[in-house]
Image 1 (tube, rainbow, N blue to C red):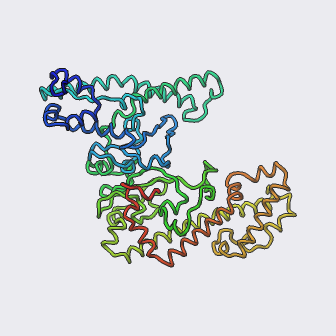
Image 2: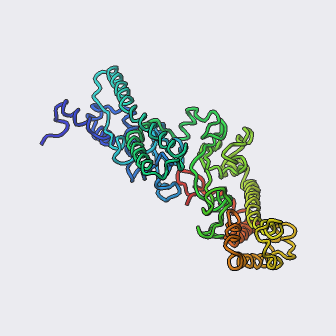
Image 3: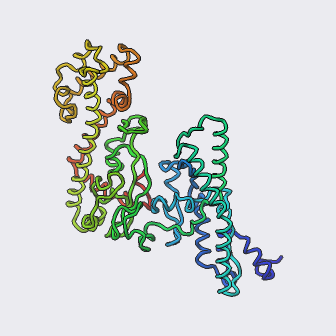
Amino acid sequence: MASLSTLPTELLCLIISNLDPIALIALSQTSQSFRSFIKPERHHFVQRLLALELQPEHGGIVPLMRTVDNNLTPPMESDEWRRNKYACAGCMKLLTHLMFDNHSILRLGLRKPPPGSEQADKLTDWEPVDDKVAAIQRAHTREATKRERLQPWRRRFIRALRQYARGQGGQMGIGPDAFTRTGEEVRRRQLADIAEAEMYLCGISRHKRMCNECRMQRGDWARHTSSNVGSATVPIVRSRALPFQDEFARWFPNLLDDQVPPLAENERPRPFRVWNFDKRGIVAPTYVMRCRGCAAWQEIAAFRVRRDWFSGGRSMVWEGNLVRCLCSHCFAKKHGQAKLAEALLNCVLTEAGNELRRIQYRLGHGWRIVISDFDAEVGRLRSWQAARNEILGGHRLLLMSPMRGDTLANERDRKELQRRLYRLRRLLMDEVDQRARNEVLQSWYRLWMEDYDLNQASFFRMLDIIAKIKENPQLLVDYALHPDRFRFETASWLS
């Protein structure tokens, strides 16, 4: 029986040229004769790595992203994303998605191509090298042919996307023809054109994708960009937006969860937002920063930085602050664990105090509106003055400052406020008419009334965390020096 090594050269070349990138490298590694015959080059190994990232056992899932509304399936906070890896064409490694900025994995040309697309089923571009110059010329010709072949799809994609946005009122909303049969048919056709073009364009530039470290070595972070909010020497790269329990948990994830259990999804109060009123918890961007000591990329929470540096997604840092920033491991080696405990305690107490003030604002927000509803000339509850004294009458907190934390922590005052709140609920649900009830229970006022008990529970949970930390600051050192706490190779901080 004939083997591959005994086949004529022309037939062997034909077989090899129809292999996928993984099989090509595997064949070149079976013997010295095949390696010398195939002579794999660097771009062949890159193609192999790009093929491996599409296999579930190596690269994890292949997320599907819809361009018209940026809908991602599955969402980034799902368990599937924890094991998701992407290929870096710089260091030639499969790395966790957290080692790449958002553009490197979400732009159309850099995404993982979906199953059945041209890039997902791509064969190797290997060909026998008889003349190096001729091979380079053929490679340039292939690239030119590829660009020419994809150009109509690019134009079709851009045209359909613009037409879809124009039909939706200039953005991805409801346009003037939203409720006509013709408009629906046109939109379906536009969406079909966009989806078909994406099957050809998705993943065509993956061979250019590089991780944060390789991009830094190349000089991509030498200035502020939409991704880098740090400096040239200490880049801070914007990463995934992920859900957290609250602002405190965003900067100190999983802190004391074994002693103070985290709140379940239905136990989390809803923050006061201008959109997504009923969404519990927060969704906040994460940032990765390169430690100047150990050169490891870690989540920004490992560096004890001020959260207001990143207000609104913009950096308020200056070079002197960043140069001194070391991760907790390097800080402990340089200054000792006692100094680390002091720095961590200051950061935790500052952020915990901010979180307490946010909760106090939410708890006091509705009481101010209740006072206005009863006392203002056009107050919405002015006609029900008989219930006013039961709800507002004479309590010092309601008369002076609804935001004071010391009174919230007072057991007697807390129970009295709860009693008055329950009386207000009975008034709104059982005594006032439907029109007045609908006028009152709107926007943040409704959230305040429905989540008052949840906010109060969050307030005392935060007080419990502060008490335990003050009692034993060593807990913070053990937390910060966990081997894989903030390192993205394991992403244990997300668990």
